[in-house]
Image (tube, rainbow, N blue to C red; front, side):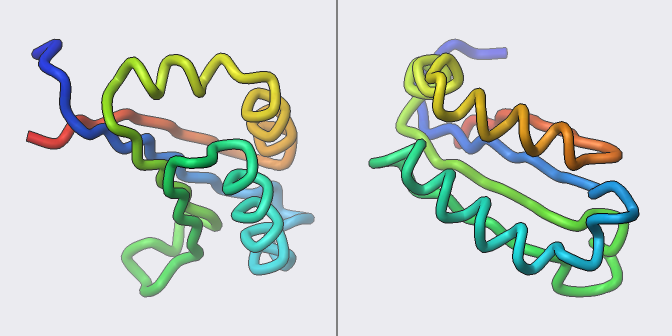
Length: 102
C-alpha cells in the first residue's frame, strides 16, 4: 500500500436487522442528514439498492475525503463515532473499507 496522499473514499455497506429492513428508506434519509452534519465539509452519499446485484445490502454510505489523514481525523470525531455505533446496533452485518484514488 502506498502512503502517497490522494483522495480517499470511505465505503460502508449495511445489512439491517430483519425487523428494521422495511424502514431502510427512512433510515437512509436520517443517516444522510446525520452524516452530512458530522462529516462537514466532506461530501457524503447514502443509498439503497438500485438493482438486484446490490440486494444483499440495505444501505450504502460513501464519504469522500482529500486524503487518509483527513479520514483518520474524522474517524476519531465523537459525533461520527456515535452515528456509527447506532448504525452498528441496527445492523446484522456492517462492512467498511477505505480506498484511495490513483
